[in-house]
Image (cartoon, rainbow, N blue to C red; front, side):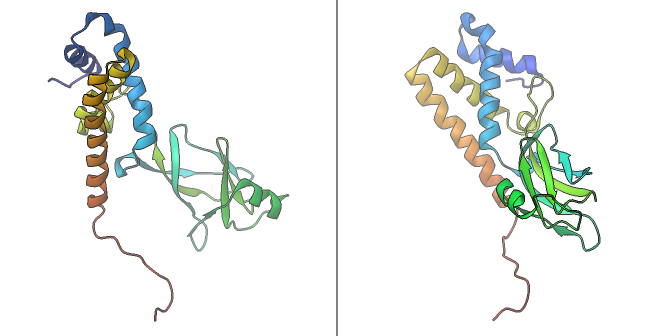
Length: 199
């Protein structure tokens, strides 16, 4: 199996399918798998750290944003901001006066800090993995077997082949689980840190 380019991936999927009539559908199978992977995978290799600079307390989310991990205010006494629901911000900061912020919220594609402030923010978030049709992403590079199993499962659903569904779904899910377990173990020994004196 030569997984070197996007074209190679399509060729290999075609070989496993062994059906000439599905060739035009293979890019769709890959895209559908990538949509599933975006929802299922939350691992270290998806994490991206960027600096955002608000204007009037608001700033656009990165275009590849999937979910947030941490938002840190970088002013004097640097600190992580707490997430608050938009309704909480609206109730407690209706005019959003200028001051050092304590909270942030996300509405649509915009982050807003409250109280309002334009100091740079250090944002750590989970990035939506780029489609393999445009870039050789981390899943492709590290786990080509997941692309194969995922696309084959989508093909099985398309052809309504129960035997193929039973073959490829467990393989896909097992690889998902292995990747997540490997990422969990890579974090090392987990411990909870507590501020202040302990009994």
